[in-house]
Structure formats: C-alpha cells, structure tokens
Image (tube, rainbow, N blue to C red; front, side, top):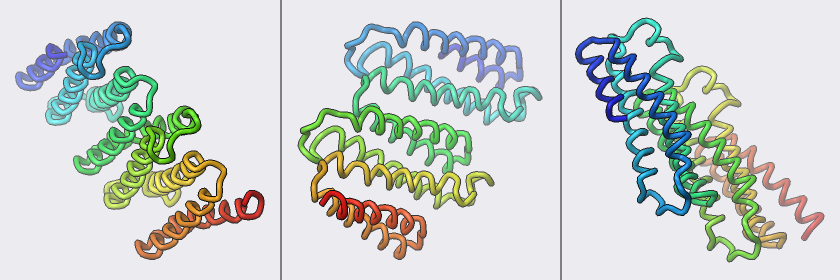
Length: 272
C-alpha cells in the first residue's frame, strides 16, 4: 500500500505515467491480499487492536491518498485516465468498500456494525458536500442501504425481553435514525450542489426523510411491545412531525405524520 502510494506520487511529480501504471498493479495486489488473505485472519482478535485492522487501515488511507493525488494531478493524467468512471472513481469506491467491509470484520455481526456504518454514511454525505465530490455521496447511499438492511433483517430480530430503550438494539436504531435525519438536513442544506437527478422531488432527500421516519415508527413496537404505550408514542411522534412540518416548512414531515396517525387510528380500533 505504501509502495503504491509512493509510485503514484512519483508518477505525478516526475510526469512519468509508467510509474502510475505500476502503482495500479500494486494496488490491485493490495486489494487481492485484503480480500483473500487478510480478511480471513483468525477470529476472536481484539477489535481494532490487531494486525488485520492495521493492514486494512493503512490500505484504506493509501487508497484515499491515491484518490486525492489523482484528483490534484488530474491535468497530468492520460486521456483514458480522465474518463469519468475510470481511475479516480475506482480508487475512491475501493477505499470506501474496504472501509465498510472492515467494520463487520472487526465488530462481528453485532449492533455496533450498524452504528459504525450509520456514522460512516453521514461522514460521506458531509464530505461529498463539503469537498464537492459527488462520488462520496453515491458511496454514502450504498452504505445507508446496508444500514437499512441490517436494521430490518438483523437488529430488529434481537432477543425479546430486553429492557425498553436501555439496550443495544435501541442504540442501533437511535443512531441510525439520527444519522438519516442528519443526512436529510445536509442534503437539504447543500441541495444547490446536488446533481439534477438528486434534486428531483421524489429522489434522494425525501427517501432519507421517509426512511428515518419509518424506522422511528418501527422502533416503538419493538421496544414497547404490542401495548398501549406504542399507540401513545406514535401519537406523540405524529404530533411532533406536524409541528416540524409547519415550523420548518417541510411538507414531507406532514405527509409522514398522516401515515403515523393512520397507524394510531388502526391501533385504537383493532388493538387498544
């Protein structure tokens, strides 16, 4: 990983494209080792305090650094390297994939993996808007899809009988919901920097807001069970959503509140 980064820097510094071609080969070898050798290291290691994580961390940093070098020296690249989906995006996507992969390797199939991915997705959204790099944003969308999959198929099936709201499952949902609402806010604040398909009324921004509200609604019965307190929590959630929609002038909050109040009505009629 260090060799590939140095070759990349030298190729741009000395204007020697062949060195850059060599660096690509080296980084391919790095990826092969990470996937087929380092990721299969013995289980039961101390999370983040082991050689496997060191290999992933250094390689990820090297790939992001190579991405930065390619971006900074893009005027010196050959024509095929400047292509929109050629070298620069490959390095950025690869680094983000390995960053995402290292979480379950270190943390296992646990709640903390969901939390780490939610934090990663939020940082990627922020970086994409702060540094004007749309590809970070695309990577963040993929990470948030993984967060949603984990919440639905893994974290929501945690053992029953947990102390309501004082357990790891609720922590995973809470952090993920906050991350989704924060991503919604960041996308709304930086909407002028979004590409045309992202600005579409029913594209990125509403998807994040609706997903966060769905998971907020879902976590109530998971924590409170099929009890009256779930109805009370949903009624409070719907009221807050109406208030937010009017106070912040975000009509989508109001639409979400209508759905929540429909769920409240169904519970009152057929359960409570």
